[in-house]
Amino acid sequence: MHSTNQIASFDKINNTYWVYPLLVITAFLYLSVFSFATSPLYWDYISDNGTFIMLGKLFLDGRIPYLEYFDHKGPILIFIEALGLSLSSDDRTGIFILQIAQLSITLAFLYNAARCLLSTINSLTVLLIALVFFTFTIEGGNLSEEHSLPFISLTLWLTIKFWLSTQNRVKALHLLLIGICGGILFWLRLNNMGVVCSCTLFIFIVTCKNKDWKGVRKIVLYFTLGFLLVTVPIIAYFWVHNALYELIYASFIFNLKYVDTSDTGSLFGSLIGTVIYIFKCWTPFIVLAAGTFLFYRKHKDYKVILLSALLFVFGLITTHTGAAYHHYMTLNIPILAFGCILGLYAITQNSEKKKLSWIIFLIVFIPASWICISRYITLEKSETPPYYIERARDIASKIPENERNSVYPYMVLSKFLPSAGLMPYNGIKYFTLQEWHARHEKKILDEINEMMETHPPLWIITEYRDQSKNTRFLEILDKKYIPYYRNHIFELFRLNDGTVKPLEINDSIQ
Image 1 (cartoon, rainbow, N blue to C red):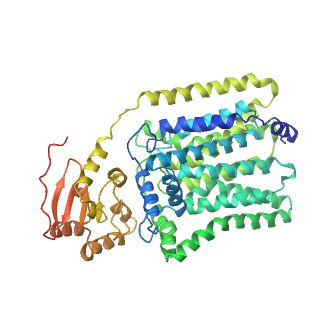
Image 2: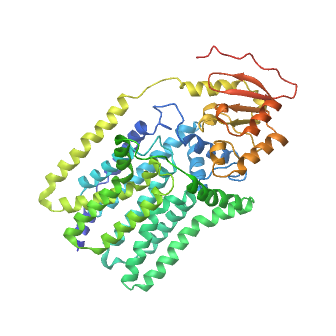
């Protein structure tokens, strides 16, 4: 068994408060280099970031999620984006500030989790390994998986404290916090609950095995209470706004269809692709298995096998079901950290092995620093917006200010709206990625076409019109609209009500 005396001694010397400012600085520098979607070193909106920013903007504009605009992520993500946007007049800057806070908190929780077993230097090594892996899954930043990390990391830390505690006694406050984390992740994105489910079930099983029935009642009571503290206000908000069904449909029913019809294609198309897939998708589980083996070989603690097995099973289910996109693997960073904690404890627990701890730290620190520095050196630094943003702003500039509340983008990238500085037409809730969403729910195109027939917007902007499979939409566009302007990326159409004439097509813009 593990030595509780040694664990206690680490708690007593855990006065390294200088670490926390270091974590904030690390988070700032790390995100500056790797969060392409929000960092001040970059201009562009990329990946799902553009959609998520618009979710927050539309909420701050007073529109009701799912009723007046649609996405299949949970409402907590919308609230997080709205919070970030409220921190600054510049949308990317506000989100960036929020990301720094989130990553700092995540690192602090993982650091404290590691300090339950490890020295300061070994705990920092765990954080370095986690950050290096994160560089391969962050995919531009401002994604739901990144926003989930503080809550997952807190749950893991509290679970480790339970595991190492005398007689495994549960604490009401810890259970309440885990319940709150579970509620937040449930309403952020259901798949992001893997670690919380693992940890909660671990605490429940161990408490039952110890025949601590009072503790079992506490688990049920306080976890449920924490979950309800998040859930009740959300249900109340959507109930009051007559959008409860829309919330359930988007967050759960649509997502079930999404998982059922998603396909990431061949994962083993080439040797390099196979290596990348294995590294991104399986490294946390491989490290967890290795760390668990090393720890159990020395300490014969069945509970570490149980916790690791639950983390493996739930982590695998929640990140590899349906379309296993690489940014989903961000959710497994705490699992990777736990595997590192176990392995480093087994390797370096003796006091005479302090030199080994520093050697391991340097082995990790040098390549980690090289990755960050090389990435910064290769940045395409520019003081002007990239071409896409310039063309988006150009097309937006052709629309009169008093008519910009009646603009509907169709078949454009998700980053178009924030790039152009436009808000979508309020006549229909499907404001982006319409035909991608329609792959999972056919009625979406019917609703869009009905809108075009009965209450069409004044302006339509397209980017990939030739790739549209919605023939009815294109027929209505040709019948009711006139080509008004185009540049080398976008086409602008105006409702043909006899009040405007098309501008001269500008082919001189390069």
